[in-house]
Image (tube, rainbow, N blue to C red):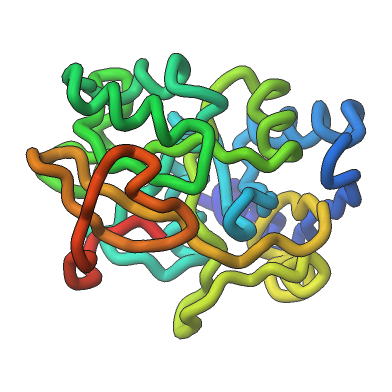
Length: 234
């Protein structure tokens, strides 16, 4: 018990590292170090094509719990897998032919798709009885480089703090506010601050959960107003 207490105190006193990377051509050395931090169980604040996000390894329940604590998320909110492409994402979700065709047209891009999780996803990381998971493939060069160095998807959540409605997008401000809560902040400058469009593909016909940067017509869909807020990934 005493050793556990000491580890918790050390974690609370630790300060996040801060990497400044080029937004288009990120330095491979820094990206490799960021991937090592994720492999070691770290939580990373990183840029995407929609906003800054918090991320960790998929199978790391402790790190995923830290993300939920930072965000103040209740159990109904899904976390999202950031993947390099559809081939990588397909391991972690179950795709019928009609779902595959839609997801293929939205990857990479500003879309998040809700799909039934496969057996590759640890049950303890899922929050609803449907075993639902969000997947997306960001277009930002930094996160794509990080995914390549890590060699696996990143379990993620938009960096919106409790009581706030918009993401933190200033990396220096993120470091100031989360310097004892995360292990690394990757500074690639501000993001566009437009959320992804979230589409629920667990049912047919598909349902628009949140309208954001992605136009559903790109997928061949004509979707009406989104559902009331609730379990959408944020």
